[in-house]
Length: 95
Length: 203
Image 1 (tube, chains in turn orange, blue):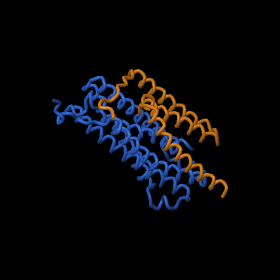
Image 2 (cartoon, chains in turn yellow, purple):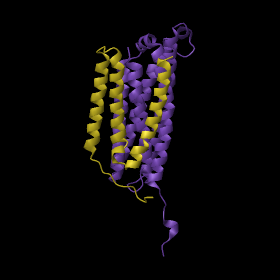
Image 3 (cartoon, chains in turn brown, cyan):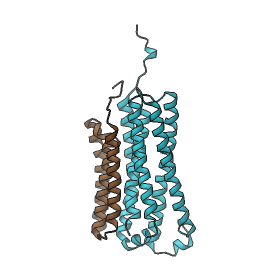
Image 4 (cartoon, chains in turn blue, purple):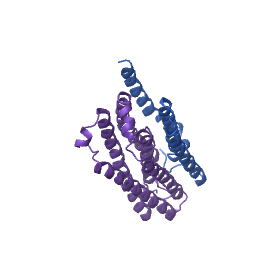
């Protein structure tokens, strides 16, 4: 395999912008919680959280700059967790 | 003739792959707890909403901002070492540890208040409550507790890379230890990103 790590010099500005986006999304999720959206609030909260998690994974954890192998690999735990949670809820809902 | 003894064999991709596989097991560890949370919340929706009223949104939000900022300083320390800026990388690493410590101090005051008010596992106040509230506080302590242990371990690892950077073990030509530590730190951040809305923002 590679002797020397591949150099990906990302400008610091990118990371600062991602950080600002993360703070903005945090403010948004708190605002959404006080809007009393009812059943929808759970969906909104999880969507915002997943967007934030995606930003951290894509930029801070360098997935954007990795090769396709690492990007594809990450789909395995996501698929596993989705299947486990999905199947469990089919049981809970139709019990 | 090439002196083979002086050739250091490094497997950068392999080291990173190993770290990612470990992180997958961490994701599954926390997913099990998130699954429990979502089942009990579906069954005891009202109790969960009432129990979450005991949480301080301000403390939770402050801790979210602290962890997000620490993630940025962590990634900037890796950028700095790649550019060969050793001192700058060390400053960013130290800042990350300080943010991690600040997170734990906040967490201490948060837990302290709940415990002083009688909400701790097996307390008579808690056992007198409804089933759903007992489950909420049980999950709250276990999930934020295990997350807190991860913050502690992450901060310890960054202390280690700080000294390795000072000694030159972590350098512009070999920074995988710092990068893998960073991956761990960011995953801890990702888990908190989900914990915050699920425990603080469901009133």
